[in-house]
Amino acid sequence: MTKKDDAPGPARAGQEHGAQLSAALGACAAGRSEGIDVILTLEGRQLLGVAMRILGRYDLAEEALQDAMIRVWSKAAQYRAQSGSARGWIYAVLRNRCLNILRDGRRLSVLSPGDLAHVQEARQQIVPPEGWEILSGPGKLSDCLGRLDPQSRHSILLAHVAGFSHGEIAARQNMPLGTIKSLIRRGLVALKECLS
Picture (cartoon, helix red, strand yellow):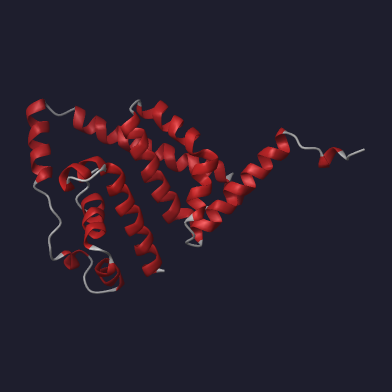
């Protein structure tokens, strides 16, 4: 006869799932990329589904999920178990990213078509300067940026300095979207390792 506590059940499975997500956040905080892999294996489809329900477009949902995972990776050390579940924290990061995308879209939608075209044309002229070192001045960030491969550095600067979406960067660089996302992710991981 087995004890009630030893019997598998939904509550126990939920606890194990939560423990796995918490451990995955710990791995991310320690700079181990398998943490993101575990999160995406356990929750990836559900996270994408939530993003789809909020944004209504698959391409935006994919972008939101990618951006959220980068944020989870870079902010995992801020997670505190006493503040809530790991799953709740991860979903909150995704929800915030989706809401930011919606907010950005609303800001553009209030412009007239002519003004919107003008804004888009002006954005296409923005290119991070070749002398990107001036962005951070001398110091650790400048050194770490200098160690990145040129494609990753340029993609990161387009995304985080010039404010382009991954899709816009892919179009500018004439590269597949997945390649751009991979370049940015690898570059950010390398930056985090270099800075820590």
